Length: 417
Ligand SMILES: Nc1nc2c(c(=O)[nH]1)N[C@H]1C(S)=C(S)[C@@H](COP(=O)(O)O)O[C@H]1N2
Ligand SMILES: [Mo]
Image 1 (cartoon, protein in one colour):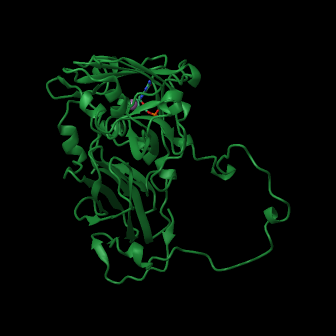
Image 2: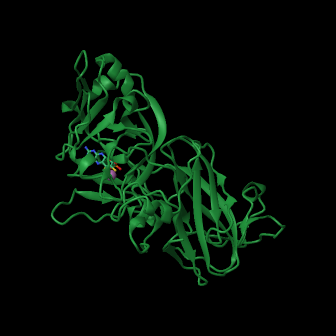
Image 3: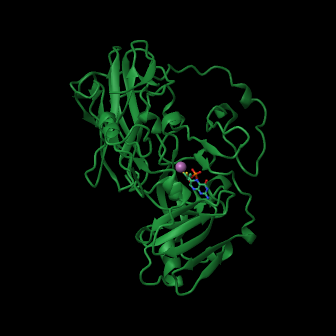
């Protein structure tokens, strides 16, 4: 954690245990602890010409520890997930090489010249689109998050997991997606009366399928072809994926090959055996699509160390599948008092929002937590309230309040409030 020196205490506390007013971030009153000026001899890298060009750039070699952690199932190298190291990144956009991955049976190597998207079922004109075809349709661009419904599921366990913010919440990424609005293609195919669902299928060896309400397909669903300006990565569904803003990541079918318009959901494996909500009494709730309002502090977080009392910036990410984040509150006294954090501009719907708040840490053990509210008025429940809604074992759709304990020695651990 970077410590900010030189802060003058001017009666600017916004909540208990040292939380400062968010407007201080704009006032310039919080100077970072820069070292005194010492221009010595030129460094080595100024004494010989630098290296040459490259066809496709890579991050600095000094950044090689910024990786997506993964632990695939033995004997099935392409099944499982890797996570975005949220605590090692800044801003809100996930670099393409660090977008989280969740594959049910590996990444197919699709030749775009031989790939087609079929639209069939309850339509007047079944259609097939080549990649080249699709590229000729009007495109639109949106910054949207994708979150696996299993993200942060560790919070359902009895003991808090001692792992990084990315390790817990990293089945979450945010990109600028460009593609063709699905409603344009469905209009062209002509949806028949009585149609209510669209079954999406991927061209991977899992042929992963999900049923999507027709209403969503006619609303803001996009056939995404580009991710942060370049062709969508193989890991994210090259040459095309379904993007359903705010809905479960699982429904954003990658390597999309087929959309079948139907009058009922198909009860695919991933909407029956997985991604359902186990309720008290043993019944499971199905077809819960929305990724509800949520937030996580990433700085400070597990694995980081605070270097003595002083002023620090608390920063994190907030998001909601229902729209824009309207407010993020932070506590430094374990939930007794809360202060409003500053939200990074612009706040976009169904996208990650960065929040920040200065904190004057006095060096005593403290518990930090964040609580987000979205524009529909939904606020994150406490972890205990979230857990109480479900049967033991349910871990999908966790959106409870998360908290970190800062010890007197500056180490950070995961705690339950
Ligand atoms: N065809 C196909 N689509 C898929 C998957 C898959 O395994 N196959 N995984 C799903 C799951 S569970 C999630 S959370 C998201 C992950 O998207 P990403 O790998 O681009 O992060 O894709 C979904 N789409
Ligand atoms: Mo997922």
